[in-house]
Image (tube, rainbow, N blue to C red; front, side, top):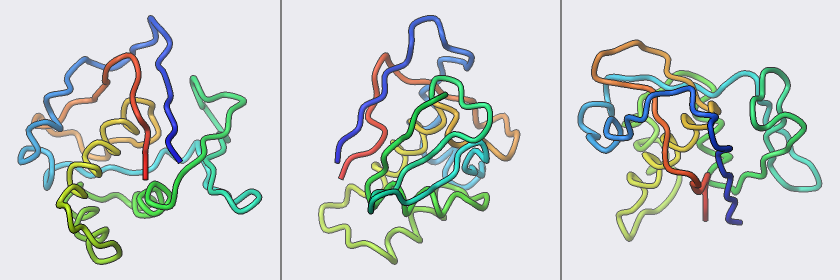
Length: 141
């Protein structure tokens, strides 16, 4: 299931520095990311959803539907992990015949950081908070 979430204009509180995750080698092993504890993963009617339970920002009074892959990644990031660690664990769970898994996980991290669904756990000069363009795919199958 493809979900799109659009950022409201004028709502950027983070630096416009998308290049950090584009330079994967700088971020993959040096920065740990963790799921924002203000969102809880629940299964409702057989569907995995994130429900805001705290400071939810643009997601207040919302539910975010996750596909199987996003749900898997969300569970991984319940503990602080680097992108490289997440990629390695995902490759143990899922086949990647087209070689696109790593890029998909980087995009997941970038998008979830943009909407404060993931948080950076280390403060490192190599990493910066990220935002993306006006609309971004949160996750697709």
